[in-house]
Image (cartoon, rainbow, N blue to C red; front, top):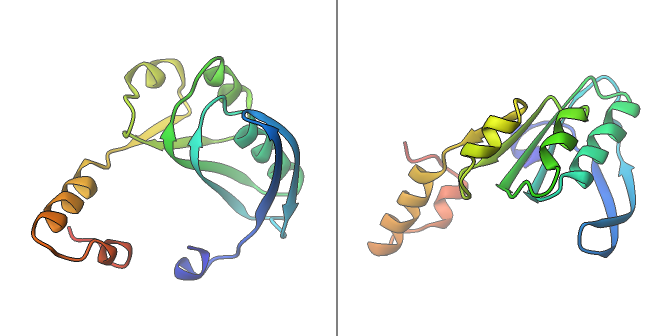
Length: 138
């Protein structure tokens, strides 16, 4: 993704002993003076992604945003997000987000229905779905 956007890239190496329990997270790369965007598949309790945001700010990032596909946001995730250094947590609407939006002003939701609809249409007509990774059909 970074190559395609022609932007610098850093990553976190995460080690977990069990689900929702992070044992260690190491930042690899230089984020000093940069806007950081965390990308992940899901955010559940948000402890890991908010901890990563804190580490990025401590490493010199000027702003931190997080983008995740599935915003589960269980337990006290709303409070964790609001107290964190994340400027925004952006999620898709693969899960209902109405109540989460009411509880968390840092949350933003992207509608993926048009993309999923296009996947269904292409599948139905035997067209390439992988092309969606390289072009936006609308």
